[in-house]
Image (tube, rainbow over all chains, first blue to last red; front, side):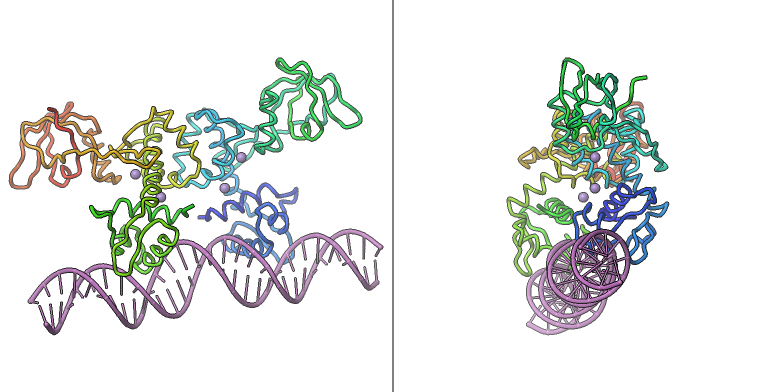
Length: 219
Length: 219
DNA sequence: CAATTTTGTTAGATAAATCTAACATTATAA
DNA sequence: TTATAATGTTAGATTTATCTAACAAAATTG
Ligand SMILES: [Mn+2]
Ligand SMILES: [Mn+2]
Ligand SMILES: [Mn+2]
Ligand SMILES: [Mn+2]
């Protein structure tokens, strides 16, 4: 069984993996907020325990076992976030920190009950997919709002970043998942987009914001 | 902030404390399932951090700060157990192991929401009192079923032991908190008691079982 | 009270997870 | 293509939580 520390490394490895499933030591060090020697020694441990493949001076790669374990921790994280929002009344900006701790609890029934009580949700409160019990993730290909054009109507479906600050910004504008946005115009100079939704007849969203909003095109 | 390990020591210290608030190193070692030298070194650490008073060859004593911290961890444990039973449909025999992990989560709002959702319960699923937010415990003086006499009617209110095995024994006899028991007779030889309750017209409970059943006398 | 048992301490070792300083390799760029 | 920068490794130290072996103090008992 992976330690809590190892579990956090596995999650980061899973999230950082590129198209070749590779992760560099330096990226991992940055992500985990530890020094490179710490990562170097940890990847040796993780390899010894069968979670990843490591060769000197090469990027590391999760084994299938490591990938599944990571996905199952992410499953616990996202189920917890959804439970906190749907069953306990938390805001989507409050749940990440709590889930970061709850994800390490070893009690399959606890998470199965959450899952059942919520009717087996497939996405978390930020629109990210919840891996299934086998650790499989259904990847959905949303469009970034930045790539949309004036005249289109879209539905806010997910976020590429779920920091508390960004979520609080969205709260301040009454933006939540499922909101239908009409794109009124797009400014060529700074790529900002003007949208209307609900009782907001005209709201300007900067490129920085639009990049982080994933949407479904209506039709 | 106490480490998870320190938190578990604080809980054990709280539970083992005698009338003079003292705990012996050997008791603590047994309870924590570690060696005496391990406890010896840990109590020095706990003293250094202000959780207890330690003098060579003397039993240790929690400081008020240590006592409060312990009570607040026990509060999280018992709130969790109650939440698992009342809001998530777990049996009273399934919740201790999960609560043992959840009690270490640092997220005051999480436990406050549980508390709110349950309407501020004062006892856990095994009848033990839930300390308040200040770490104060309301001690209730129940009677042991062993000390009751034939002819008396009592209500099962709490347990002195909540091991899974004992809880499963109680389940098998349909005994749960709140059950009204009529004491039909008491065997002088082995102190066993014959009771009737619900649709059980005559059930014999050994002294070993009666010792662990805490009851309220009806009038 | 002296012998024995129980309880507690010290010393020294180990494993996990981290660090800094120094060095090595690989990648980038002048 | 060599100098420089970026990335990665090694060595050695630290902290936390644990252990066993050896010893010391306190309590119990004959
Ligand atoms: Mn999250
Ligand atoms: Mn985590
Ligand atoms: Mn319990
Ligand atoms: Mn615990």
